[in-house]
Image 1 (cartoon, one colour):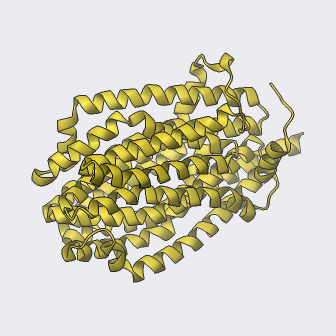
Image 2 (tube, helix red, strand yellow):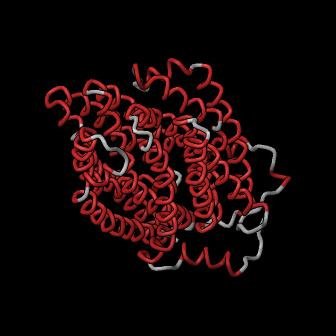
Length: 461
C-alpha cells in the first residue's frame, strides 16, 4: 500500500535521508533530549516532595521501588524498540501498510503484557519487596509505592511505548508533547496526593501513574486526530503473529538491557544495605540526579534510531557510519558539561532533596564517582540503539550481556569485597569504560562488512 506524502511527511523523510549527519542528529535528538529532561523532572518530583516529609526511610523506599518501574520500562522498550525498528525499516523500504500493521500490533501487545505484569506483581508482592532489599523501616513504605505502580502498569507502559512508536516515523515533537503533559500532571498531582490527601509515599505513586496515563492518552490523541504519518486502521486490528515475532526478535534484547539493569539495582541495593538504610537514600538521590546525564544520551540514541533504521532499510551504510560518529560527538560534548556542573555542585544538588548531613555527604561522594560513566555510556547507547534499529538483535544482546553479566555484576561483588563501599561505587565507571571500546569496535566492523558486500554486489552488476 502506497500513499502520496504531504509536505510535513516529506520533511520527516528528508531529515532521515538527506540532512547532514550532525544536523540530523540534532534535529532528531534535541527534542527528545528536552523531552527526556522533562522525564528527569518526572522522576525527581517524587523524590523532592517525599524529601519534604523529612523522612529518609520513605525517601529510601522510592529508590528501592525503582527496579519495578524499570521492569515496566523494559516491557515498554521490548514493544516500543522492536516496533519502532520495524516501523522505521518498513517506511525506509516503502512498506507503509506493514508499518501501520506494526503500530496496531504494538498497542495490543502493550495491553496484554502490562496486565500480566500487574497480576504477577500483586500476587507475589511480599516476596518481591523483600527481593528489592527493603528491610524493617522501609518495607511498608516500599510495598505501598510498588502496589500503586502495579495497579497503574498499563498507563506507565503505554506512555513509554506509544511515544517510541511515534518517534519511529519521525514525529518527535508529538512524542515530546506526551512527555511534557505527563510530567506537568505529575508535578501538579504530587503535592495534592502526598500532602493534601496525606497519602505520603503512596500519594507519590498515584501521581506518577496518573501522569503517565495523561502522557499515554496524548500519544493516542495524535493518531486518532490524523496528525501522524501512520494511521490506525480497523482492518489491521487482528494481530499478525509474524509481526509479533519480528517485534520480539529486536525488542527482547532491548528489554533485557533494562531488565538486567533492574537486576543490577537489586544486587547493588542488597550490597549497599549493609552500609545502612541512609546509604540507600543517598544512593537513590544520586541515581536520580545521574538520570539527567542518562536521559541526555538516551535521548540522542533514541533520535539516532530512526535515522539508522531508515538508512539501513535504504542500504545507505556510509550515511549510517557518519550518523554514528556525529551522534557520539554531540553526546559526549553535552555530557562533559554535565560532568563539570555536577562535580562542582554535588553537595548543593544532593541538599535539594534532604537536610540530613550524612545523606548529603554520602550522596555527594557517590555522585562524583558516578560522573565518570558519562563520557562512555553515550557511545554504548548509540551503538546498541543502532543495532536495534538495523534489526540485528543478537549484536545488541551481546553488548547487554557482556556489560551487565560478564562485567558489572561480578565487578560489583569483587570490588565491594576487597575495597568496601569505595569499590562498590567504582564498579560502574570501570565497566562503562571497557564497554565503550568493545561496542564501537563491534558496530564499525559490522558496517565494514555490509559496505564490503554492497561493493561486491555493485561490481558484479
